[in-house]
Image 1 (cartoon, rainbow, N blue to C red):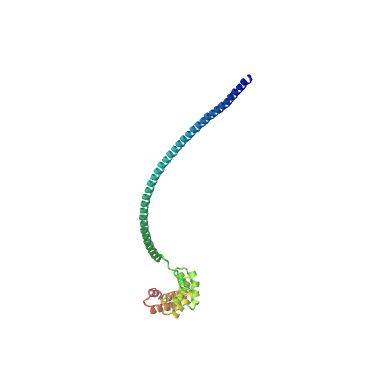
Image 2: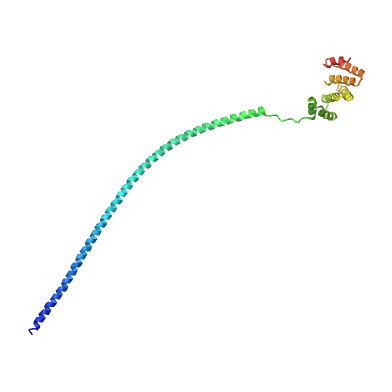
Length: 255
């Protein structure tokens, strides 16, 4: 009985101690957790402070950048305004110059129009002065006479003979053809043919202006043929019919 009591007391004390130990451990654990929590809280607080500082720094940088941007933008705007002002002034000057040039161009256009009209009149006048009239168609008669007068007797003879056969040629024109053919025959020493042509000239066209010369060469043709009496008769007829002719003086030499 005596032994049981101490054992019970020991057990009781022993149990209390364990409970206290357990509680002490719980307290220690809680204390450690609190320390850890405090440490975590402190770390979190530090981190938050760091973050706040970083945020402030970043915000400051942004604000500084924004300020710089704003300054730059304002500066650019001022430069842009100055440029616009200069361009507007240049535009006004250019517009004034353009207006002046437009007026000058209008004046030049008017002068050009005046010059154009003047040149048109000058060219028209020159065209009238230098314009060669259209060549008229040369008639066979005119062509034949031109050949005779230019001394081209070989070409003139067939042209004149053709006209002699034509019924379109009459009057003094035909008388001239007889005369010219008679002269060609005389120059070619075809004296008999010459006497026939000059005789027809005198008998068919007694009033023709070619008869004085025709009678003179008719008399000379008779002389070439040796018919002196016939020649003298012709020369006398020439002097009688055409006393004012220049051939009268030459005809008297053969009488």
